[in-house]
Image 1 (cartoon, rainbow, N blue to C red):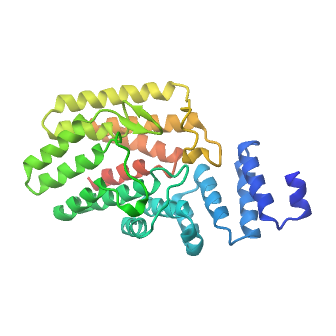
Image 2 (cartoon, rainbow, N blue to C red):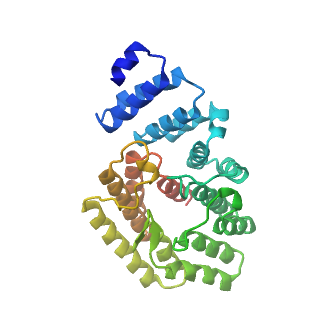
Image 3 (tube, rainbow, N blue to C red):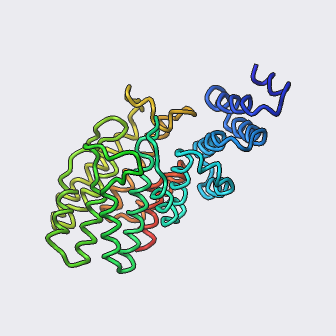
Length: 321
């Protein structure tokens, strides 16, 4: 019926939008879905929701972040209309290394909480500050780095959300330890590394996880505290967990039905879980000093998901060494 409606009136955007979702979710034909969304936008170029949904489709099918960013920058007024589009623009700025622009956008906009958007504005706030802090450390600006890392610990009111009490912030504490160490404040650096090293578990996607991307920073913190054996043990445990995860059938938690990846286009849970497993393996090898293996795995992650934020950030860190 939708295809018939499109033939009768090819200038009605909602028909093409519905077809785009149907082609992707039901027929598993992403190329046809992409064409349908292009036609929807041509029919109604002033619809900000269509721009957001097409960007989500592009993200899902692996369109390069640079191309997605270029397209969103053509439509600043439409992006400004929506919180979700603004978060995606922040993410793309960060993905392309434009961290100051990402921070400026996430700092000046007042976000409202929305279903499926949990952690979006806060995640970009943290990523922007961590990236700028790491740049400060690399360029010898330890005071600036510390300020950015401390800002990452806090959630400004304009974000419309706060950190979950069980969320793991070991990455922030690890980098704060590095900043204080560079400033010669050894006692404070050890305090932050100890906080990162001893945090147990992580609250992600409505459940507690024994291992996550934060485990890597706990292990690095043990090593910086002089407990190399404890750090290497944790990294090897992470590697074992990731190898097992790659072979397990993927399943979704009952309460996780509003995750951003599930709100519009159906997600390939197995593909996503295997990508996560590859990334965790890359982190483990990186922490264990196997840089070539880590770099190879990170590139595999980005071939599977060009928008994977942490894979891009780790590769940038490797290139700076």
